[in-house]
Every structure is written in C-alpha cells, then in structure tokens.
Image 1 (cartoon, rainbow, N blue to C red):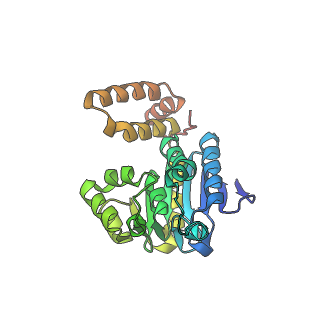
Image 2: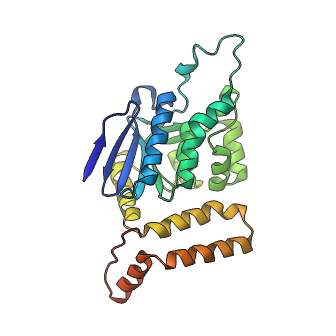
Image 3: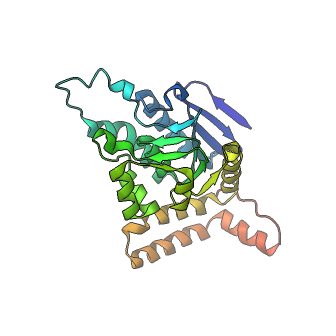
Amino acid sequence: MTSTATDHQTIAITTLDHVMTITINRPDVLNAFNDVFSGEMISALKAASKDPSVRVIVITGAGRAFSSGQDLDELKEKYVPGHVPELGDDLRRRYDPMIKIIRSMDKPVIAAVNGVAAGAGCSLALACDLRIASEHAAFIEVFVNVGLVPDSASTWTLPRLVGLGRAMELCLTGRKVKAEEALRIGLVNEMVSADELESRTAALAAQLASLPGRALALTKRLLNESMERSLNEQLEAEAYAQDTAGKTKDHFEGVTAFLEKRAPNFIGE
C-alpha cells in the first residue's frame, strides 16, 4: 500500500511496503535547507521513528541535487555590517535534532544520494546508516570556504567512515569528492548509475524491511556506541543485547524456519 503526504512545503513523503521515503523537495535551489525544511524534516523523522508500520527510512533529493546545505538566500538580509550571528543556537534548534533522531532511532536509514551533497547536506547523508550514491553524486565539506567549521555531526561521522587523516584533509580543504572516490575511500557503500539509483535503493530497503527489526535495532545501537566503550564494556553490551534479541518472536521464527528448511517470516517483534 502506498500513501503520499501532500501537506508539506519542502519535503515529499511516500510509504510503500514498510519503507518511508522522504524526498527533499526544493529542486529549484538544489534542495537547500531553510527554516521550514528543518521543521518538516524533524517532524517526519520523529513520525517515522514512532510508526510501527515503518521499518526502513530512505532520504533522497528531488532533481539534480541531494542537498546543497544551508539556503544562503535566507542570509542576505541578515549579513550586513554589525550583524553578529548566533550559529550555535541555530544548529541546536534546526540541524542537530535531525542528526540525533537518525542516529538514535531503531530503524535503518538509507541516504540515496542522487547529486551534490554539500555542507549540512553532506552531513545529513553521512549521518545515515547506509549511503548509495548515483554516479552523479559528490560530497563537499564546504564549510571552510565560508569561514566556518563542519557541523551537523560531520566531525563525528566522517572520521568513523574514512579515518582521521582523510577526514582532516576533506574538512580542511573543502574539496569535492566525486562518487567514484567516495566509494573507494568508504564514504559510500555502493555506487550505481543514475538510472539504477531508485531501484537499487528500493531493493536494499526492501531487504532490510524483511529482516528482524529488533535485531537490526540492537546491532545499530551496538555499532554506534562501540567506539566509546572498552573491549570489556562492549562484550557486556553484546551479551545484554543478545539476551534481548534471543527473547524475540523473530529469533524463534528464524531458528524454526531454519530447522524446517523454509524462508522465515519476520514480524519485527
């Protein structure tokens, strides 16, 4: 069953077979972020996180860009002599909540990067659990070019994906990383042709949606928290999570299906 939301100004939402796709829908400005977008995206992510019928979330962009980041047109009237921006407050209100929801929600989040992902748009893609890039995709930590630092968790996600040395280079130089290089350095999980991006993303999302949701959630949590724990702490966290997973209906179904030599029917419980 498909449902389409029509009451949004900056995003479009479709839900099909337990997969919610959130499309950033400002193609005329390369899907740049404005105040309305931030509010709508935060609300959509919260709803997806709480909706038991949604098992996987896909984030992508309309037109030829994933997102160019902050909409600089919003700043024209503000940036006059004497203006003192309060960017930290802006991040806490508009950007950080999006990242926190994606990283903390139990469900897998896939970024289908159809074009340029720059600035906060790059950060949003990096915050997702998996990234599939079109051949036309590019990633740019553009902040240094306007005298700023990477935000929206780029300084947390990027070193974890590509290592500290490469992350340092990309953030200090602000250079563009095209899709081929992004795949080579581990910034994305897959690269496909532009014509294949939608179908390949749908196939991956469907695969994840068919798997035991509690096991996926616990795995995501373990991996996210692993770098802040000692080995002994992680072993204990694994034991606790495994005990939790072992008591789910999906675990019983998985073992039973294996013994009966049939495909399992996981229900997310």
